[in-house]
Image (cartoon, rainbow, N blue to C red; front, side, top):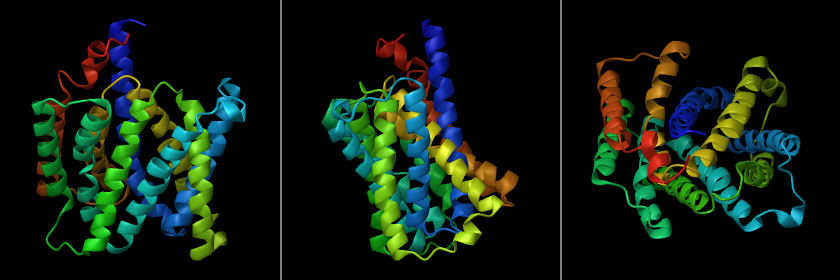
Length: 302
């Protein structure tokens, strides 16, 4: 593969990952109408894990149980698919969604720290400045007049960002394992564990879950928001810095805003447009020209 093709592949994968995760906000909003947060998260990752297990077998990536990197799989199941999502959903039960969005937007800053400590990855000053600018844009978009919440649930949202960031950097450190080897068992472990808690502590009207809209949202979150997006994320972590992947969390609110305006009946006014401009400017400063587009060249990948 030529360098130009490699760059194009990285940019396409990065754009696809951001686009998918930007649209999952609407899918989660629809899903929460009929499913409790723990049950929804559990079903999402059980379905995703089963699908990816089938794909891994078809692609020849399935292995005997003794050959799987169970330490990495267990840690990623706890960080990326368990703690991250559970903390985020718990925060959503008591905090305004805009505040949760801003608090989770601290993820890149945790990644700067974890990346430096765990893998010696140090972001350039321009990257940090761009992340700050983009974070300010997320705040402008998401925070309106009255912000309600409590410290405990705010800490849950920040904890979700820290947990996801640690999971990303850990995945980067162990990125020599193929995504289809790591993802299926990690998703299944987290999915069944979270689902067990959901079934035990949440009341679900299963007849409402099976309506077309709710089932469609669940399958979208499982197939696109989990199978495809996390595969792209691990694929990217093999090729670009962890901080570049982490910064993607700052563009998802802009995509979610556009999706909400187009399909969810939401309104985008001057404040949202200004915030979006700040996010895009910050990402451009952080990732171009020495960011995603040239990362493979800097890392010696072709």
